[in-house]
Amino acid sequence: MLEIKKQSFSETFSVYFDRRMLRILLLGAISGFPWVLIGSSLSLWLKEEGLSRSTIGWAGLIFGVYAFNYLWAPLIDRLQIPYLTKKLGHRRGWIVLMQTAILICLVGWSLINPTENLALLITIGLIIAIASATQDITVDALRIEQIGENEGKSMAAGAAMAVVGWWSGYKLGGVIALFTAEYFQNIGITNYWQSTFLILGIVVILMNIGLMFVHETHSNTRKVNQKKTDELIQSKLGSQNFITNIISWISGTLGGPVISFFKKNGFSIAIGILGFVFLFKIGEAFLGRMSIVFYKEIGFSKGDIAIYSKTLGWITTVIFTLLGGLFVIRSGVLKAMFLAGILMAATNLLFTVLAWSGKSELLFAIAVIFDDIAAAFATVAFVAFISLLVDRTYTATQYALLASIGTAGRTTLASSSGALVDWLNGDWGIFFILTAIMVIPSLICLWFIKDKLKLREK
Image 1 (cartoon, one colour):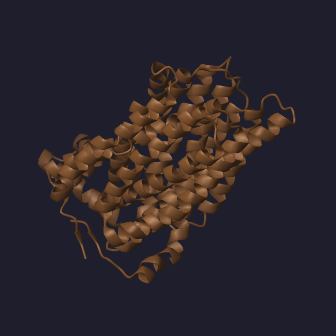
Image 2 (cartoon, helix red, strand yellow):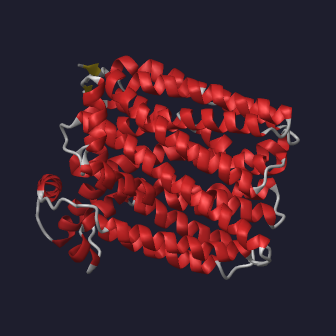
């Protein structure tokens, strides 16, 4: 049973001044930054190289790995990286390893011509996605483990700070990418995107330096509980030998987190939670996947996109994510998610108005602001919800499982977004109406499971 205690406004807001929130902010930025690389930067790069909307949309299939990172999350929970784990800690060692892989991939991209080596370009993008998805597993675990199990207020605030950090990494990374690419283009550099990726590599290095200031708690509790699960499985197998030891370790590693989740919530509630998580942000993903292509087609420059969609959007996201965290703490997760779902549907319709009105900086600013408000409320409620559900024995695996299921709906289905726009003959207005309608099934699902969740506020 989840409990979120109501506080006075001053007590609620004061939680953001906890030093741990700064660490969570940085972790969020580390998690969000790679999405700039394989999202808006890659999409715009391909667009400016003359590739079709459908190709750009299908290239987004590389995001699909985020939907399946729970498959190897159990290994991240248990396997240690030689040298790095001893020097940096279990969680930080994994993050640094994945950041190094991303850095190497950026160098690889800087050497590629997209029209001549599209397959290689997408392959490197896939490697970045895999490294980023793997990194997310341990980033989320490290973020959750910064907060005590019984600190519900801090967990909700931490969720807000994680979202602010994620959007900061994503938005500010986008600003750096867009302005750098435009600057290099204006001064006559032919391969301006390739040069931009080298600058983005410097950002990766700076984030790794910042990671060294994030505290990692060294506790044997997780190992002890995992070993107990292994021993329980071992006892069911009867004799103890090398083979049964391997079987019990694999079974405990892969099956323990799933069994724990269903046992804690009950089968019907667990299925309801998974259904809602899968459906919640599909409409937002369809819009997000094609948004930068829409901005370009309607006539906005890279600088315009950087100012309105990235800079202005980031400021809006920070403010309303923090307010969203306060709303979650004071009103509860369910109310926040219902509100966020309604806001997401409504704000998607603003893009329809923009599409049918033509290029308008005022409408663009309004649409971006309200879209970011809706995204902020939705994400902080979602992150707080699943963070409170996880068992600390399997923090990385259970959070990755829930987050991956949410990502599955967004990435796999949204990959057809470009094809949908083409099928509509480029009618962006109808496209955005359809993205608004996509929000409704998740709210229906949430309505049916809300009483079974039995959330209690006090």
